[in-house]
Length: 193
Image (cartoon, rainbow, N blue to C red; front, top):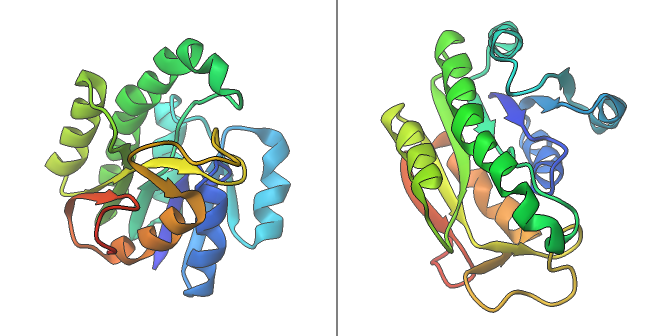
């Protein structure tokens, strides 16, 4: 399968790449950071330098790659949990405008599949619109628990509720690459997928 992974250098994206490659998928990894292009190339994927908010460029790169599946693992979150309140509007923009742009690019490229991350521990109008857009387009939404493990807000101590180790979240994402469609919860207390 040809997979266009938006958010390839994020906390879950970097874990998905080797799993996707091990299953024989051809992967394009998108980042907006020029310094991460070589990291993606070294990982064995086609690096794509593009910002999700540049809708014309996004459509062009997705159409050029011709994916079977677009995977949306984009967020805009800080490295330090204390800074999270300052980043919420930016992350909301990723879930709103960014999701709409990715869905449009997938539609223009005639990609038959679309998978997007969401969260299981709260909801608000932005998250609801994000999920509704993906489902309306025939896609799949994975509501992850709060990530813990290396590179996350909870590196040493897991959060109290609705959680999943980031490595396990990546592993449990893999069966959803080929379906089924709908909304699914990926947490420690949810049944394994």
